[in-house]
Image 1 (cartoon, rainbow over the protein chains, first blue to last red):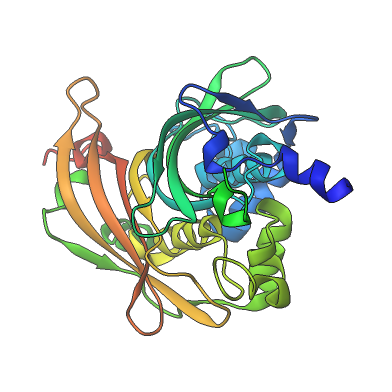
Image 2 (cartoon, chains in turn blue, orange):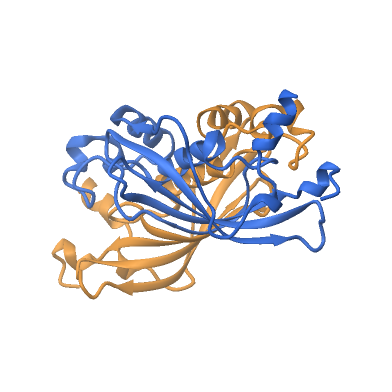
Length: 163
Length: 163
């Protein structure tokens, strides 16, 4: 019973429709200065991501999160609530990532995803591809990242349903 | 003297040529199971990135690194040695990311970047854009990620050189 209820909230390829918008729920993720610097130390050790003082003299004119930090947090928001796909979120590939404005310390991020295409696979009847544009927004509703990706999505029929 | 020597090894827009290949130097980054799971817990908490046993029953048929973990490690390799740009590595945007095969525990990653386009900016004479295709390779030389990005690159003349 519980399993069935849970299952019903998961989305299969048949549940995705062009123009549908899916939003992350619950608390946004806060990008505090410590988290920005910790990610940068591990993966993107450049001055504009590591130190307020040095960052002030760079292209970014102040501390900014690594774009890949924003991408990683976007993934977390998608996995936890933003896009509840039955088989998980499996990227076949990404067509675009843009960062229209920097993520600053204290920014609170959430995601919105729009379904752009839904295509059954010809060779693998148990799955298909969905093209989705995911916009990551800050607390002012301004986009800080726009990403278009192709996701591998399970078909409902692979679960033994006749339709 | 030291500063000058260091400066000379940094690349400006004028130093980039179509077809040039830049490679990361030194030790590859090893993707061990602990690192794969730690990244996943923080940013991509899905079964195929978190547990060998559960991963065996999924699409990936075994533990695999999050694609965003590979992207983050790619950035680290680019920043540390792979692409020594004078102003740092600043992505204007990414045109493509593909993950042709999974990254498995123990894989050792390095990067190769090919310069595809070099364009001065019309509005900002101190910089330009370079389109670069970065391939992340495992220890067998097989690509695990292919990414094409547009980078903001400083021009040499912005440094006060006449040429």
